[in-house]
Image (cartoon, rainbow over all chains, first blue to last red; front, side):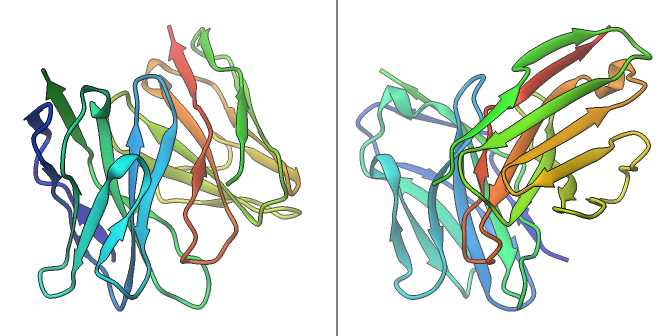
Length: 115
Length: 115
């Protein structure tokens, strides 16, 4: 069975500082990894994904994520946080199979960016 | 990316009644999914809506309680039957081209309150 862990319920960062939202995963075989963001009263928006290749993936709104196979991690990062980045962030994993398998989500991390 | 709309956006219903939620996509998609999310919490997959056949339900969800239709490749409905206050949640429609490497896109959600 596949699973995702987001160990921090909330991350607090001052605007302008770098931010990291942690994610570790467990899956049989090679993983497909995703980050989503959810703003209040909105659906989930896709940020970025890792499929294969370069371990550093760049996505929307200046976010990037680093895939580390040995640590089974896929942490979300941004060099300089904005107040508007405050939202709920979800990491998700899907195992590679010949057909689509379901996407498994972490419990979410609330990012709070303050002035 | 796909543009997904859901109707209604929110509703307040009495216990014992049923509500049908509609999901419309602006392009044909292979996979459609229904999720449930308590506000600020993670997503739980209810079922995969299959075009032309019965939906595939996840453990803990049954067709009598959550009947799903998918008459074509752009539209699906989820009915929440014989509602109780425990059904109060956000219901999200999601779509995917079907390949494991592709991200899923989410609708804005339907916020349901059962009194």
